[in-house]
Structure formats: C-alpha cells, structure tokens
Image (tube, rainbow, N blue to C red; front, side, top):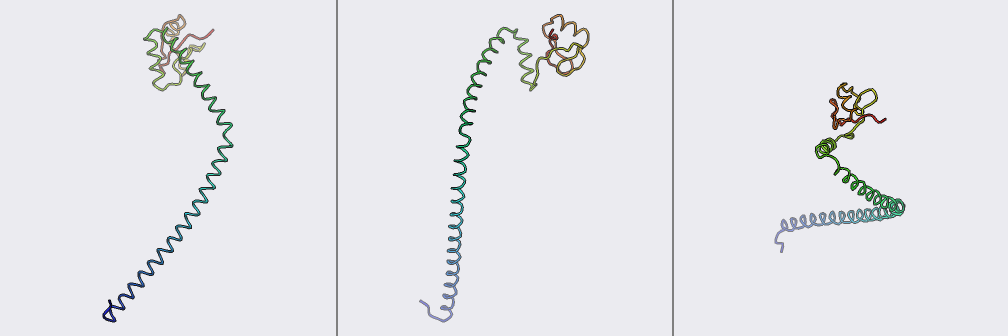
Length: 154
C-alpha cells in the first residue's frame, strides 16, 4: 500500500526498471532460441555431411580393415619365425643386437663394403678388423657408429 506521492513515484520507477529488465530478458530468450535454431540446422547439415562421408569411405574402410588384419597375421607369423631364429643365436650376441635395436637405430647389422668401410656409416674399418670380419669373426662392431659389421656378400 502506497501512502505518499513519493512512495508512489518510487514504486512506479521500480516497476519501470522491472519491466525493462523483463523486456531485456525476453529479448535475450528470443535471441538464444534463434541461435539454438541455427545451431540445430548446422548440426543437421553436419550430420548429413558426416553420413555422406561415411558412405563414401565405407568400401575403402572395409578394405583397409581387412588389409590391417592380414598384415597383423603376417606380422605374428614373422614374429614367430624371429623367435625361432633368435632361439638359435647365442644369448650374448642376441643381447647386443636387441640393445642396438632398442637404442632407436634403424640399422643394427650392416655389411662391410668391398673397400673395407662400414655399410652403415661408411667410415673406414681398420685392416685388422677387416680381416677379422672376413674370416668370420663372431661379432665385430663398427668403431664409429656401433653397428654389427658382417662380411661383404659375395
């Protein structure tokens, strides 16, 4: 209940503020609903594009998945062969080889060139070591790069 003109003016001012705030909130709601509608349309377009893309790659995808399984089975077979061969190698030599491979090298074993150089880094191997490699020394490593050097293939 309003008793004075001053109180009435204050109530009217407060009512005006509340109405303006309500109008702003309503405008914001309309704007957000508009934005939601645009986002939903965009989402529908993107879902349709995704479905088209999936349909376009489906044949190739199936082929790749089949190829992946084939390669995995080949890799398992090769690993089994490797394990058989590794079982026949002296543990010390196998340990050297595996440490070289674990160190991140791409090449662990390289043939010596006809000129007597390492087949990996091409640094010249001393004559004494060349003779040891040619006479089937069990394990000779390159002094420069550390790979296992084997006799040149004839």
